[in-house]
Length: 224
Ligand code: FPP
Image (cartoon, rainbow, N blue to C red):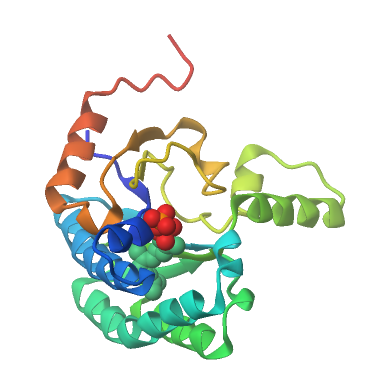
């Protein structure tokens, strides 16, 4: 069966650029173009929820020049892309602490989310200023403040992903084999898939290969 919810850690933009003697920003631009085409392909394949790790809380301490470059890419592409997603019936969501982002970016995000709300084809979630430990801690702190013990369902409802289907497949590009503070709670029973390709080189065919590998796995969720 095809996974319903796929997440991708889009790693390797910097190394992709370095290999070509280009500035890191050129890697992010290539990554962004790949991300847009890959998302189209994923929805055409029938995935209903795609969560993409674009900027972690840790990434926010990168040099100002690199962050400014990412923010300007965002300003250049996000409004038109959200319009395109609306036409396709895809709901756009941003997960993470958007208060960590510049004010104008927050406004663009809110407008994009409003524009695409209610799209029934699927959800494209972009993780920006996202950290899984922070997400879990803020859910725990909320429960503590309310002074109550939670069930798994109640806890899940306090996470950014509360209305997403369970995470089935988590892909990481760029050769590293770690989760880097991404969807730590949600990944409990996700299948993991690591690609050696740098993200700008991760093609539609590479996603198809990951989906094929997923379909061959036997998911037992801890049972026999
Ligand atoms: C990781 O590569 C990638 C990022 C930190 C940014 C991901 C962003 C995009 C794919 C496109 C831009 C998206 C938006 C929303 C503007 P890296 O820089 O860590 O690569 P490296 O590990 O090779 O250095």
